[in-house]
Amino acid sequence: MALADQANEDFCYVTTAGRHTGRPHTIEIWFGVREGTIYLLSGGGDRSDWVRNIQADQRVRVLIGDEEFACAGRIVEDEAEDAMARRLLAGKYQGWQAGKRLSTWARTALPVAIQPE
Image (tube, one colour):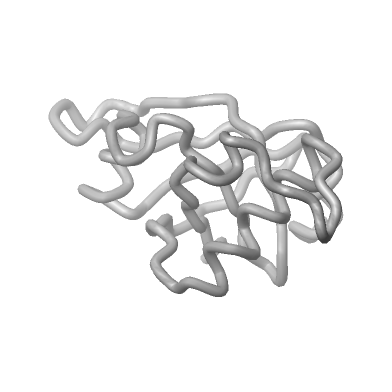
């Protein structure tokens, strides 16, 4: 099944390798899918353990529904991609629509992109 087929699921599970221990660290998190990439917003910014783990080792596994994907994660740095990720998740989970102001969460969280390999 393709990643796009999983886009309407409510949440995904992201497993990173602990940056100190190397042990698996799994979180449940909201997500969006656009053009073959999974987007997440970290409310804790770059202080979140899972974000720090991705910065140390970009290899992650993502479980959406009954499909698991081997992926590479990264912090979104491109301005246009950043804005798109915020709108994507705010639209999916908060009913955001063009012309409306994004919520505090959608404006301030750190966008992370996860690309299936």
